[in-house]
Amino acid sequence: MTRYALLFLVFIGSAAQAQLRTIPQDALLGTIRHVQEFIVEIDGTQRRLSQGAQIRDASNRIVVPTQIPAGTLVKYQLDKDGFVQAVWFLTPGEAKGN
Image 1 (cartoon, helix red, strand yellow):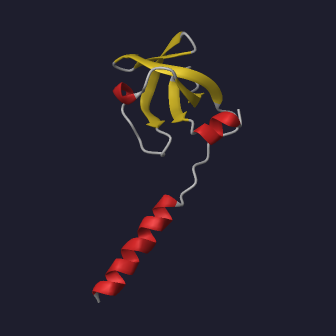
Image 2 (tube, one colour):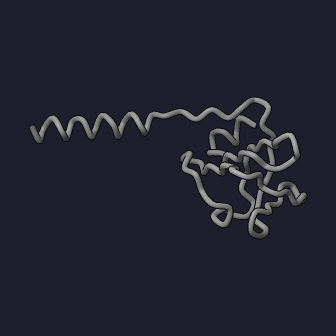
């Protein structure tokens, strides 16, 4: 029984590791840094994060704004009001493709 539980855990772990993330084609490219609270600066322009904004690191984990390393190359999307809705830190491979 323990062997089956271990195999199950290995299978679940490998499935989670194999998840691909999809960055929308219309996402914009920029360099980001956190300024304060819900304000970030992208390519020298300060922008507010929208309510419910998601920031994902290169491993696709959700991070809080204070965890943004200054100068990180990202893809991002704005909502209809011009607030930052979604941010994806780029992996080295994704950065080369841009």
